[in-house]
Amino acid sequence: MDYGYINARVRGMHSILLDRKAYDSLILKQDILSIITELENTPYRKEVEEASVLYSGVLAVEYALRRNLIRTYQKILSLVKGRLAEKYILIFLNKWDVQNIKTILRGKNIHISQDEILECLIPAGELDEVTITELLKQPDVRAVVDLLATWEQPYALPLTECLDDYAENRDLSILEYAIDQYYYRNALDTVSGRSEEARIIKSLIMAEIDVVNIKNLIRVINENVEYEDAKRLFLEGGSHILEDKFSSMYETGNIADAMKQLDGTPYYFLSHLPDDVFKSGQISSFEKELDKFIIKNGTRTYDGDPLSISIVIGYLWAKYSEIINLRIIARCKYAEVSDEELEEELINV
Image (cartoon, rainbow, N blue to C red; front, side):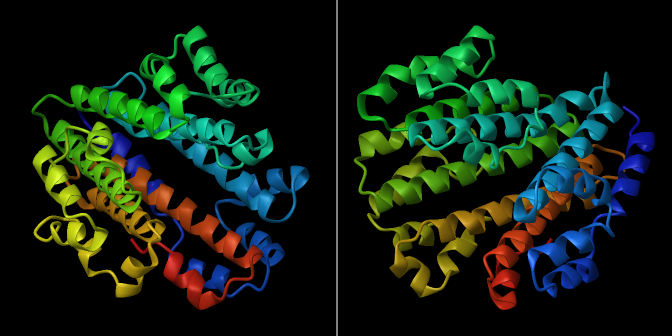
């Protein structure tokens, strides 16, 4: 298909993403109120003004960022509506449906309030705000899954099939694996063709599968999970973390040796993290580096073939990166984190 018009529009949207100077200006602000004031001088002005009527402080920033991201994704969808590119863009946006369902299930599993769960959700996929609000009203995990089944949502099927297993030991990873497996299997089926667009999207999906497998490996090794249970979390379809690699890394018995087996792959950086990361046992450090890798990997596609979907996909990741960075700045200022620590948390793409 001809991406000329779409890519021209997307380049215009990319041109107004915040630059390093804008980030530096925000970082120098002393408190959350001055952050809000500064954001009113950016493309986030409309959403910040709306948010300020409903909320204050960091909640206003969170609301404004969510609204802006949702509107951005809706605009992209309107550009590709009815075109071949729509199915590829939906793969990206449906990630939010998966993430939102996971977040709701996690919240219900540990019985936190609707408002606390809502703060972590971004209804940017096919599950809109009304749908998500109804899911949040459900009393527990089973009720959430049952409601999805009543609506005949596709994600209900894999979740329903695993509900009894989950009920036996309240291990939420069973449900999370089921929904991941369903999402990635369907995503790969969607890009099974040989076009350049399919190649670009497939490469990104396979990298994401690798990352999910690495995260699961780190967790099961850290928690001394038996291999029979660990291998149930392996996702097929990755590019470098195949089943034999998954097994070999698990058999090392410790995270440091497992990460050494990633040398020669795009994930080699995990074996070169500081010693204190391995000694601390904090798996969040590894997960954070993997999340940064995925974002940078997606953002780089913007510099790909100018006549393909790569510009659109690259922009979507760049926008997501911007939202993440702004959330980091706002939360760090709210928590009075030092500017040096804040800088370390930012994703530089």
